[in-house]
Image (cartoon, rainbow, N blue to C red; front, side):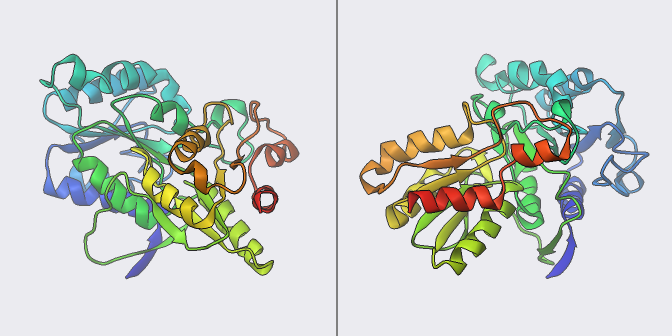
Length: 323
């Protein structure tokens, strides 16, 4: 076991698969000469050359279309967006082409492509650079959505995503790129569609993903001081959703709180709430609570950023309210 940064874990995942398979390549803004906007692709141009680590123009729709076409023709592109906010410019290719290609072609053309980059709020970046897109992409049939909370999971899931025959939306967080993580020396993969119980408990189930897992775990530690024992589940994969792990936990704890940074309407929490009431209604001893981002655009002022985002205090209040 060794300790590396989150960004290094992502680079290792891509590099390991690129060494094995010459059809895997990386493209995006500043991924080559600049070594990546967040240094995720540091050194990859030197190892793999400009035919496999490709700098693109500031034209998300254009280079995403190139990636989708390459995947249709047998290659395995990794398309990096400098932020998922910029991927709105490429959404026609992701949703209207990549996600639908297999069904529209009657199985003739698969689309083994990974779209990845930072997602969600990252401090005082304002309304147009702070959106969390998991729920939007998870609502699209044909896409798989992954949103890891730590470097260990990110590496294993990204390697699995590169091998997957379907288009993958891989959500990271620029606020986690410098996080330290323990990574095994040996190669490993993490299966797509399997949640992870990060902390076992008996009093309330808390479900989260991506950087909100930090909020959930801090809240669980604080609640433990008051004798409240939370079970904390990291979804890791948003679609396909591992509802069985959540339901089995709710059957044990009889209470559920869901934490995510996206807007409340049409959220991941909304889908989980529906699934749990359908599959475990008789086990619930209290209404399901959710802690989400505010139902508004993100503002720039620091005090409004704090008011917008979920935090441990809000999670603690939600858990105590259901107990």
